[in-house]
Image (cartoon, rainbow, N blue to C red):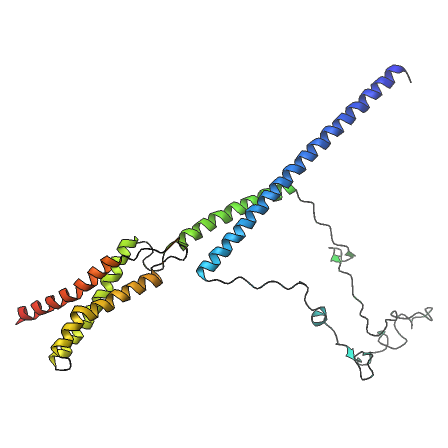
Length: 292
């Protein structure tokens, strides 16, 4: 071999070495990027888990019970076959099976041992008492022969990380929607706080007006005197309506997730309740006089 051939071979080996170094550097950079992306996704998933826990506590949903330490079910209960247990002497006793027909290998010297030319060969191997033979799982081929199951194809970590990132984005979107829904109260969720308060206090005042009509009718038949009727109309029923509206706004007018206490507009509610009931009584009197 000439010197030129040695030089060409050396150059080729140098190029291959440099190519291997470049490939190793690229693979190392790829692995660093994959690890960084995995760490970022882990942080996102951890933050999402904490946020979901907060949402669950806000809406009153308890966390699911923790899974058992061993995810495998009881193999003894799941394994089909006759049960075995300690016998009267303390040893493991097996359940006796009915005698099998000749030629089936069920405890008689037939089957493979009873075939001509197979003297001394047992039909099945001896199994110690208390032990169970387990069959290895195999995948059945179209031809019917038992072959080992095929190994799963290798997955690309970059593709799996991209799918996980998309799922995390989808989880963020659904989480934002859940937070928006959690910031709405159960009572009149699309209304503004002021309109909701006015509607609640007015409804409670209207209910108090109905009770006022009942008291007026009771006063007409002599069941309630005039002083009691005036006290309920001027103070009792308006106070009941005001506190009822206050409690309703605190129970059903408060969002599941809100920073601080939502406004209940106490002066406005007091004004509505203490004006609506006496005004309803005056309107009732005017109506009765008008009809007469």
